[in-house]
Length: 316
Image (cartoon, rainbow, N blue to C red; front, side, top):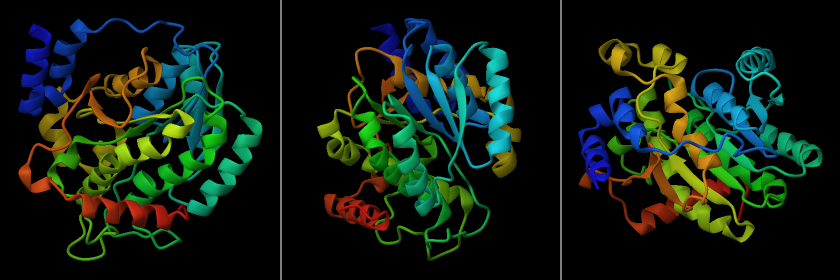
């Protein structure tokens, strides 16, 4: 079909596919979501006080969900809540505080949340960092790895009792197209050697995130949890403006808005039938996890990273 051919061409050209140009072409072929698709559901969104996370929270609220804005800074979370309520009057939006890079804090937060929220329908892991210099958490983990991989894995595992009560539980991991440039760092998972670059640390951790998605899908299949990783394309967000100013100057007019970048995460949470678990998505379609032969890895390398991450968060 024409749209399939166009979609594939856009994806391979990267620049067109990841900008607002690709979205403008693709969305012409998309059916609208049911405006009440998430009525009665509860959705937790991390990193929800700005950028794509805030747009995701507003989007799922607009589809009827109760939204748990899960943020590090409660004051900023309250400001985001006010903005969302201005855009979606009458929405049920609640602010929760959790720094997903702080593993003991994640345990405390999850233990409390499952007593207050017995049914959780979706968790969208959007919280992200791009530290300018090598930074370790109090538990000794590289900050990007802790924020994008370790914290989300642990938080989801601990929230399984609430997710399991949903008739259709879903978990969405916000990745990045930047992961295509990186090989799985099986020999240096914590990025302890070599010159440290924040953008590389970010992309490495996103590669790990995507590589582990099928394994997480298998692990949580007994609870019927759908697990998806996705990337939003190139978006104009506060994080990009702060961490990648040269990239923003070069691509500025073509960058997606946070709302455009949020679309696939919202779609994965709300669409029916339930998307296939364990896959990597962009613009509502499954995408390859490799484009460069140099990024491919062995099963032994994948298992090494998998067992390291499980051990780091205290899971068997």
